Length: 386
Image 1 (cartoon, rainbow, N blue to C red):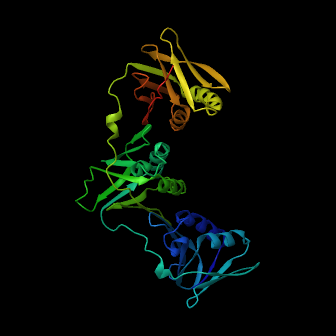
Image 2 (image 1 turned 60 degrees about the horizontal axis):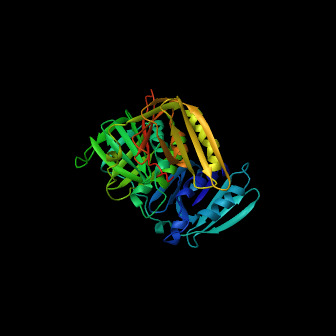
């Protein structure tokens, strides 16, 4: 293999695919990135794969001889990143020694690699269901729910986001057992094609790991928002494809909890208030709340149009803020983890929000008011002990 390419293009591609390289690989070759040069297409293809998440991208290059080899992702990436970007790089591999010589105007480096044949094939879906998705809406579905997923690996299914496709819409949902975020979007599918009749296109669900979805969201941010991305799913394997980039994800196994049963059908107390004002008050109160246990109280008074937000960090200090609201119901007080509230409020894109609840110990639901976005954020209160 002999390749002449741009330092900046190679560096960017290495930084991208290295995000799919495991820090603790189960096999030595999984600590490497695969480089494959094709003189017919004039492309150098790079692949990182940890058996769960795979990222592949291509860059244009002048290719004298086709070939493939794997190189240590961290070492090779660090060398390339420090080379001058005003000089082309020449990569030459020796098939007998699996060594690559990297030449730039500043010097020459040799890096020992491993055979490309040892690198596992990136799983590409050839059957199943093929969809074309709006990248902006898919990014919104991820960002609006990802934060509510669990960080506890013991709750494997909850470490992902559940996507339910229904006709031309999608419902994304995530929960960690203390909170639940749900977003419903219509017209996310710009085109659809059912390949395998065993999959019910009208409605099917899949749960994808949050770690992998963070990479998908970065991938979506680089896509042309006017062009749909290709999405394939078959037997628990999901593939996203744009012009020069491919991401593959292994779905989490099992049935996601029936989260809809957590949502109360009616509410006896409903508060409406300005989202930005409420968010600003919470951020100020959180300075003290973070010193103790993150607990804040919301106290209502049916005789006034104000709510009081308080926190008490023992032996440190107390804080209190008042906020105008529109209120229907009886006077009550309810406590929350302030971090949960801040996370949810930051993804709501609406000037007005409402808080609906029944009692200080039952689920509370935050949602936008007069918004086209159908977003629901349920938070379990913290029991107050007087």
